[in-house]
Amino acid sequence: MPTYATAVVYPGTCLFEGTNVSEGRGTTQPFETVGAPYIDARFAPALAELGLPGVHFREVRYVPTFDKHAGVPLRGVHLHITDREAFTPVRTAVAMIGTLRQLYPDVFAWSGDFIDRLWGSDALRRTVDAGEDPLTLCEPPAPPGRWAGEDVLLYP
Image (cartoon, rainbow, N blue to C red):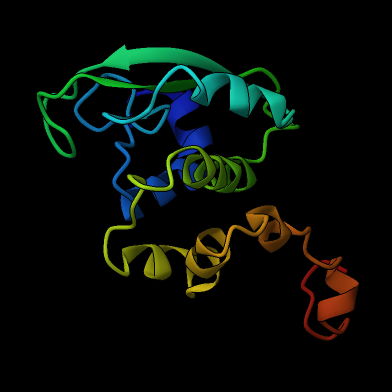
């Protein structure tokens, strides 16, 4: 990974590997930039309206040199992290995927069942395809005391 910012956003944007959206491979900012040939001027403002914490979406245009859409001009967004503590990479990527499905239902697509392997089940794909809010899949986990007994926790 070329930068610290790449490592911060990677846990979420790697989900784009399971879609027809470029996750920025073939650029100098992989996983910090996502785009596709069908994305238009509506995407960045729609993401801004979500009010996701710790991130600003800057509209970009780029041409990846390899991987998905190599040599094709793409439009998309660069994720600019404004607050590392508030930023939630997986929740952000899930919201982005839901927004892509809403804005571009006829062209957004999954890469086979790869998203199911990345997510760990078919829940994300089924939720997005049904037009439901995928952020419900990102509810905060229970505090450690609620899912494991004291005998299991190394540091109670």
